[in-house]
Amino acid sequence: MNSISPAQTAMNSARFAADSREAAGSRSLNQTSEQKQSQQSAFQDFVAGTFYKEMLKSLQKMHGKPAYVYGGHAEEIFQGQMDQQIAEDMAHSKGAAISDPLYKGYLQRSGRH
Image (cartoon, rainbow, N blue to C red; front, side, top):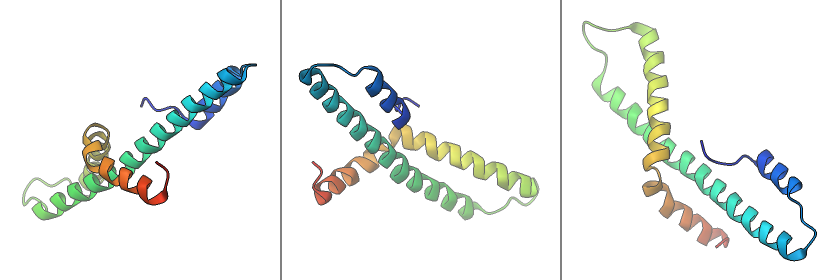
């Protein structure tokens, strides 16, 4: 994952503290941009991840259990974990198409352009 954690952002801010106001101002703009990008990424992971998880769960229920080759409870656990991983991967790679319009609407509604 390429996102920067809040702890890393804080360490970078403390480490690169500058004396001039101009440098501090430009860093605060960059930090705000990084925070906004991190927030948008988290929004995408949640919205698209939830959508894809529910879609996969619905597909699994639609097919039911096979008549002859069925692994029991262990297969159900593995299938749940596999669906979770697929949903996360799809949310990271294709989730922007679903979450970007919702995120823009959220920003407009909350007045955080």
